[in-house]
Amino acid sequence: MCWPSVTGGGRWSEAPSLLEQVVELDRKYGVPRLDKNVPRLAALRARMAEDDNRHSSLGAYS
Image (cartoon, rainbow, N blue to C red; front, side):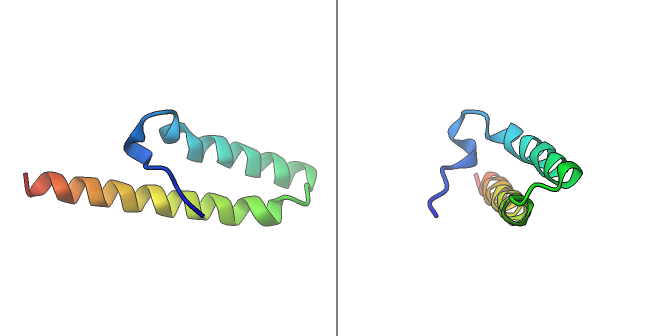
């Protein structure tokens, strides 16, 4: 899967909290997509943490 850069603008900073809300509703109502949304949330969090680490380490060398 191709991920756009988190720092590319847009509303990426809101994505984890919005997907968390989706997962909460999936759990509350027993939606079958929970099995797909939980890994998506984990992947999104990991990707954002990776981008944050990459950008903070680049700033240390400038």
